[in-house]
Image (cartoon, rainbow, N blue to C red; front, side, top):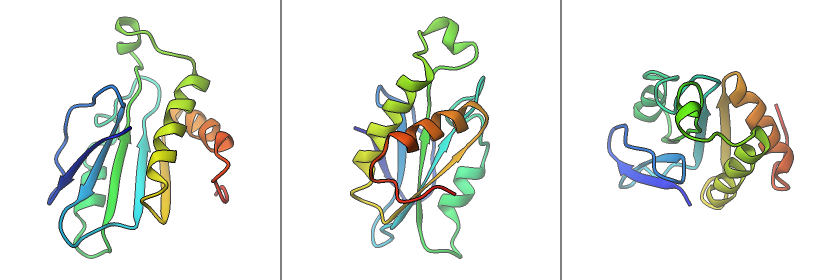
Length: 133
């Protein structure tokens, strides 16, 4: 279960209970690759990355790449909402990536800080992971 939007140009949208926002290219620009951004401690799905996901999505000089942002409660938000432990967050990300793996030839993860630990746990849980770089 992911929160997906078909878009001509990258535009942020609100995270829902899936905690993963998928920005898909519209029309004939079907992407075969996906880049997933996972923020670090005290970060946020869109806040941490600035315009970087937008630049990747909107780049007219390259084959289309879809962009997903994974968000979990961190920083001040973890005081308001209960933040599950890293293995539970990794399991949630694993489930989202398994859903997406059917639609993409390649999935890349860009992670920062705690997002790197979550991503490492996620990759260790995935039997479909071919290799780690």
